[in-house]
Length: 82
Image (cartoon, rainbow, N blue to C red):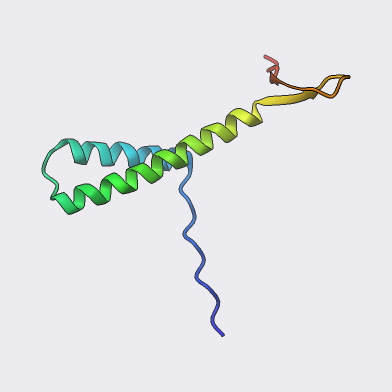
């Protein structure tokens, strides 16, 4: 019985952003064939979502959740010591 293929590792935020910049530059040249342009657009859309998800995760990590005596939850920014 063969093992299922592992999904490819997602790029880091920085790698995804660099790839997005390269895609944008290629698309702006106007020299890509329609099929290639569509493929780059789809790839870029996935990378944008990945970057947005990573930024949202980072934002959550920079906040802390506090519970008041009455049980309500309040999100407060993480205090950064300088």
